[in-house]
Amino acid sequence: MPALKKLLPYLAFAAVAVASLVTAGFAYRTGEEAARFKFEAAADDALGRLESRLDLDLSLLVSTQAFFEARFGNVTKAEFSSYFVSLHANENFPGLRGVGFLSLVRNGAEAAVEQRLSADFGSGRKIFPASEEAWRAPVTLFEPLDENSQAAIGFDMYSEPARRTAIQAALASEGAKSTSRVVLGQNTGSNQQAPGILVYSALRAKAADPDGAENPSVGLVYVVFRTAELFYSALVKPPILPVNVEVHDGPPSPDTLLFRSEAPPDTRFSDDFLVTRKLIVAGREWTLQFRPTSGFQRPSSRALPILLGLAGLMLAAAMAALARYQERTYEAKSRLHDATERSLAEKDLMLQEMKHRIKNSITRVLAMARQTAANSADLKEFSASFAARLQSMAASQDMLTRSRWQKVELGDLLRMELEQVFGKTMPEDALNGPKVLLNEQTTQALGLTFHELATNALKYGAVASSMSALNVTWTVERAASERRLRLRWQEQGSKHQETTRRSGFGTKLIEMNITRELNGNITRAFTDTGLSIDIDVPLDREFERNSLGLGGAKGRAGSQAEEDALS
Image (cartoon, rainbow, N blue to C red; front, top):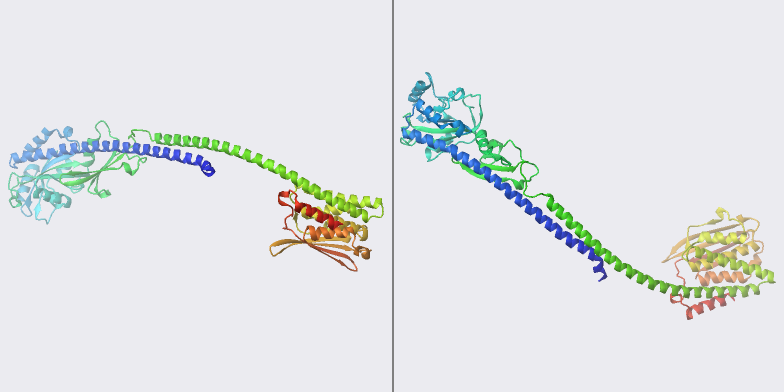
């Protein structure tokens, strides 16, 4: 249950955030779909305009075919010119390059056609270029006639592959047939070359069999469109559509491009807005691609889903913060209750610990007092010795108090005890060893030990006259699963070795501190040059006391053991 309460703010934030993001995503998706539907409608509108324009322009081919068939193909140049003038092509058929007629003759039977060309357009007119195809389809009539179209009279369209394919298709079936993309004027050397298409329709006034094609009246009518002008005329009428259009004759590629709008597509719109349509024009399939331009406006702002998502995230954050605040309030109350309980327990524990420490200290002080008195010649000697030992205990207690009864550094403890006894500052090279942290029990025991050793050195050694006579070194070694402190105390020039061999109270105190208090070992070695003492104690041994420091039989037994040992 507590774990669930901690997770509640995160769960609330996640739930509301996910719901908000899903809603924002749905709104964004809906907006995009609406924009796509709107653009598809614009694209279909553009497609409808193009279809209407193409149907109107191709109706010109139908009317021209009917005009020729009504006269059984016998249309003079003057009649064709009058017919074209009546069409008002510039107003009614924008993008129209012209209307013409092709005579269909066998290769080698061109004389009658060339004779008619000479009669209508001046002597010397010939069919060109030379061709090895079985059939020839020269231009014999064309309107409007200008300098460029005059050059096309007599041009054999059957000699050019794209035109030949459309002519064959028109002869083989009913209806109009268109060429693929061609460059108008390229084969006649015109200076007005442009991409375009030609649409053919075969005359049916005479026999459709090409075997009767020697008659000059048998052939095909055709119309020519410049694709740029054709599509532009369909798209520019108001209202202007915000679409970029590409028209390809077949699959999209640079070689099949018939038309591309001048207005470029807007790069802010992805390919999802690409609309592709197919259109059959005079037997050929066109591919039309529509893309939005900068003029296209979405039905709704794209910022709305973002604002909706941000608002949802802010709401989620607010709810999470509220849930977190409530959870922290509950935690604060719980911590306050726990802290109160711990404070009461710690207070009771501290009182019991104080009682235990005071009892132990009093026991130790009483024992030292009795033993000091027993080994003192008079009151003055007792007072000095007893005061020094009490001061040593107080110094250790003071160091523990400053460290809040946690750890005391060995070097600091040793230097303090020695300087207190000798009344001098210890040389830097007199004490050498690594940093070692001591617990409460080890601090008190070693503090008294160092005091007794220093007192003996002051009495019997040469330290009183020269601080260089004393050297203390220590190391920390790991043995099995515990760390051990190995300390060596070396005095030079001891004058009363026999006196120090006797076991007085100080020696007993040292032995008790090292062996019983710390469960360690101490050895002494007397040489001609002085005294060497080796101390070996464990560092990881916990301070032994009764459970929770509350006294009891074990605590009383420990205090009695200390008093007996000192006695």
